[in-house]
Image (cartoon, rainbow, N blue to C red; front, side, top):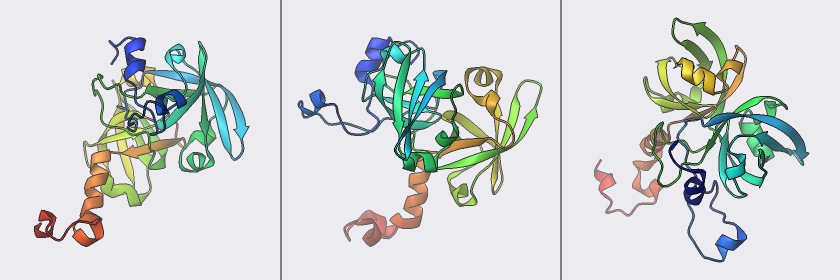
Length: 246
C-alpha cells in the first residue's frame, strides 16, 4: 500500500457507504462498503470540533489530506467516516449522534492525535486483517506494563463480546490491527512494539483511557451462524439446504 501513488490510490478507493456522488450516480455504477487493514497510515491532529445537531463536525490535519476528495472514506481511531470537505492540509468529517454513543469519538478534543487509515484500494495489499471501521463496543485500558522491548496493554471489554475473541486472534483497537496475546473472561492483553508505539496514538493510552474495539469480522459471522444459522427456517433457507444435515 505504501508503494502506491496518491493518484492510483484515490482512483481505486472504496466509498465508506454505498452512496455515490452525484456524478457517479449518473453512471449507474455499483458500490461496495469500504474495508481497512488496521495498518495506521499516520496520526493526524484534531484542529477543530464544531457542533452538528446532536453530532459533531471534525476537522483533522493530515499529510494525505490533499489526496482526498468528498465521499471517500477514512478510518479515524477505527471508525469509518466519510470525507465531506478536503483542503491541502485538512479534511472534515461529520459524526452523527449514534456514532458518538457507540464509540470514543465523543471524547476527542482539539489538539488530540488520532489514528488515520484510508480505505484499502482494490489493488492494495492486506497487511493487517479485514477491518470494517464498524466499532462493536468500547473498552478501557486498565494496566500498562513496560517490558524490555515492548509494552503490554491490558484492556477490559464487555463480557458479552467474549465469544468473538480467541488467543492469538486479531482485534482492531482504535483502528490498529493487533494480536490478542492474553485472554480472560473480561480482559485482553496486547503487546505493542516500538514501531507501533511511535506511529500511532498508543502513547496516549493510560489506565482509564477508553478505546474503540472492533472484533474480527470472520469470527463474528461464524458465531452468528452457530447461534442462528443452523436453523434453516430461521436463516431463510430452503428446506433442501445442505445445512439441514449439519
